Every structure is written in structure tokens, then in C-alpha cells.
Image: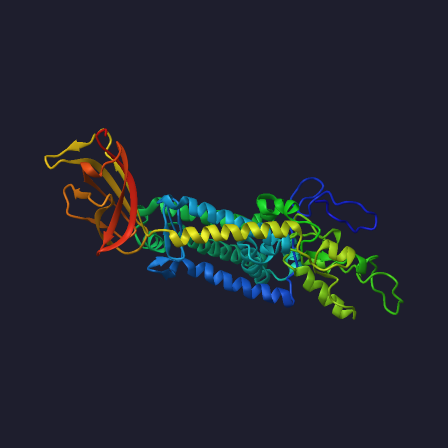
Amino acid sequence: MATTQFKPDDAYRDTISTVDAAGKRVWLYPRKPAGRLYRARKWLSYGLLAVLFAGPWLRLNGLPLLMWNLPARKFIILGQIFWPQDFFILLLATLTFLVFIILFTVVYGRVFCGWVCPQTIFLEMVFRRIEYWLEGDAPQQKALDRAAWDWNKTWRKTTKHVLFLAVSFLIANTFLAYIIGSDALVAIVTDPLTAHLGGLAAMVGFTGVFYAVFARFREQVCTIVCPYGRLQGVLLDQDSLVVAYDYKRGEPREKLHKNQARAAGDCIDCHQCVQVCPTGIDIRNGATQMECTNCTACIDACNSIMDLVNLPQGLIRHASENGIANGTRFRFTGRVKALSGGLVLLLAVLTGLLVSRSNVEATVLRTPGQLYQKTDRGTITNLYNISVINKTNGSYPITLRILEPAQGRISLIGATGLKLPAQGITEGVFFAELPRTALHRTNQKIRIGLFSGGELISETSTKFLGPSQ
């Protein structure tokens, strides 16, 4: 989607703010934001950070709230264990989440980027606040960077980067806990270093990555790495709500002069919206710019200036491009309705799969290379291997019965029953025996039930091989 421009000479911006004409990095010094929206964003960020850091230690049904254990191929979401056998559910859940993100972006723009994205929250609400605390606001930071290396600069820079490393180490430990679990993380921390060299290497590696991102790479993650920012031109349209400059009200721009009859627009060209932008853009160049994360810092800055010059707030506000151009309200377009319908359908299917999902799943396969056998009792037997997965945090004693045909029975080899451990797998071998009269075809389907304490907890099916009729 083409970016609407409002420069007087109608020149389109063909560069990004963090790279100069020679292709070198331009270091940004955004001013510390202030205002109603920034306060709301700050408290939301603190709440999300509290949830993030507490998540690995919280338990539901004796299990972590969230764990994405790729090495063990075990995933825990809200106290429910998902194994590779549940991959189709996770795939559908991921698809549902992506459709939700697309729908949310089509309607509300990149609010997720500016208000919820971990990259933005950590950078703006943690690392930049440490920087403001030690080095001051943007003018003080620029002066400090230009100054010679004296004691004042040395202790401030050293303290800042030590704190950056400490916070990065904390973030790395937290993310590692989401992968391997808090218990395994505690073992890595408390055991001798030589006992967990792999875990220690992962911890150091994660720390280095987070430090590099938040100390140096910063906003370039949003403009270079993040695919979501690149896709916004496809996802957004003229009716999407974005952080937008009201060029009809603001243009032409003109500085404010004392005792002058003002004939220009409401924009006094103070550049406060540019100075607070964490990605260095000028929101007045167009509502839909690749770098804009919709953080609303420019809205707070502009509103404060409008209050000072006795002009109405909202020169920069949440609005659609059509809303500013035509003065229309937000409307549900055909694309929004189609995405909403698809999301409802996916949610319905996902809910059905989750409700019908069994906590115990069994796989029964005929033992390879074994044919059926005839017994002296006139029955036919087949030999099977069984593997049972427990998706809960409780253990089960398991007994097997043939549900269909009703005349069949099962005999375990070497055991009277199976013991299914918590979050574990048990395996066994058994004979399934059917009378000749229960067989109606050479390859017949049978249903096998898994019982614990007399209660049917799961069932599966397999093929029973018999003589030709």
C-alpha cells in the first residue's frame, strides 16, 4: 500500500531514519515520553512483565502454565500437556492465533507492536528507562556520548552496561525456563557447572543475544528483522485504525509567532512528535510508515503542545486514512467480515478438538512378522504391541479390554496390568483372542478400551487378522 505523504513539495520519503546517505547507522536519541497514553502503556507493560517473569514458576494442575520443551517434544499450555501426537491441535491453534493477529491488525493497525510486543516492552520500559536514569534525557545522552572519557562518563556507561547484562541474564533465564522448565533451570543454577555444560552454554548464549539486541541493535529489530513490520503494508488498508496525523487540520505548517494572526494549519512545526519517536520517523510524512509501531508517544507529545498553544487535542490520533480524508467513521469492510468468520470457524473447530481430546492416548500395532494362531479352544489370537502416553500429571493403573466384538479377551505377556506414570509412556505386549464365530472377515477391526479403576479413560482400534471365511 502506498504511503500517503504530506510534505509541501510532495517528495516521497525513500530512506529510513536509522541509516544515513552513506549507509551508516544513525543512532537514535528519543526523548523520554510523557502523557496519558504513555502512563497507560507503562502500567500495561509492568503487568505483562510480571506475568512473563512469574509464568515459569506458576503451576496449574501441578504443571507449569506454559512450557515449550522442544528437546523433549513436550508442550504445556495452561496446565495441559501436548505431545507430538497432538501436533495437529497445536498447528490449528497457531493458525487461529495468526488469523487473530491479522484481523486485529486490519482493524487496529500495529497496536500489538507498540503496546504488547516483548521487544518494545523490554526496550522502552526497561532498557531505555535505565538509560534515562543514568544518562538523562536525549540532550544529556548526546552530550555524554560526545564528551571525553572522564570519570563521569566512565562510571555512567559502565554501570549502564552492567545493568544491561544483568537484565539480559534475567531475561535469558526466564526464556530458558519456558523451554526446559523451572525445575531444570534451578538444577542448572544449583548443581556444579560441569554437570550442565549444555544448559550453561544456552544461558550464556541467550544472555549475549538479548544484550546485543537491547544494547545495540534496538529499533532495527522492528525495521530489519521482524516480519510482522514488513507485512503491515499487506495487512493494513485505508480503513485500518492507525496513529495518524490529521493533515487537513495541520497543513500548511508554520512556526508559532507571538501576536501574529495565524492563517496556517494547527501544526506549529515544533518537531516534538519526531523527537519522542523511538524509531526516528516523522509521523507527518504519512500514517502508514514501515517503522511506525503505533506506540502513541507522538500523540502524547502533540497533545501536550496543543494544550500549551490553546488548540484542540487530536492533531495526531488514532484514525484511519479514510477517516481523515473523508471525515468518515470506522466501518466493517468485507475483508474484516471474512476474517471474522474464518476466526470464528477456527475457534469452533479448535474448541471441539480440545474438548474431545483424551488425557490418555494409546497406539496398538500388530507385532511385525506374526500371523494369527489357532488355539485348542477354537479361538484365534493375534499378538500386539501397545504404547500408552499419559498427558496428565497423575499416574494410572491400566487394564485392557476388547470392547468390540464383545466376546474377545486380552492376555498381557509378563504382567497382570500396565502402570502408566505421570507425564510418561508405558509399553507392553499382549494377545487379543476372539472366538471363530466373532470373525466375519479376514482383516477385521476391533476396538480396545483402556480402563483405570473400572472407568473407561480411552479407547483405540486396530486390525485383527484371521483365517479366510
